[in-house]
Length: 124
Image (cartoon, rainbow, N blue to C red):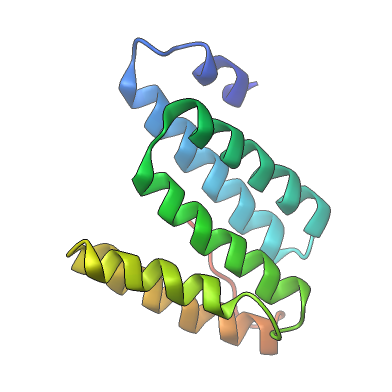
């Protein structure tokens, strides 16, 4: 319901930020729980939202999350390149804080893949 209502509130930019934060948080929760179909469904919603807003910062984050999904789904054999591409783009755009966050996230994602019962990454 929150996703639907924020989509209807184009006049309030903060609601769009909240929408993306909620979607990315849902994805993290689902991927940690290995609810891959649910995580995939959330990625589809994020992709649709980005297409409607044409926001490159969320597109970079989406690219990272696509890699995260592929990495978990493939047991660590795919997806890492996408995550590293997102990190490289942030480096090119001189976004050191976000880049550092993604690098930390990548480290935790690798640990989560190896030991899903001990490592989780939640996005708020």
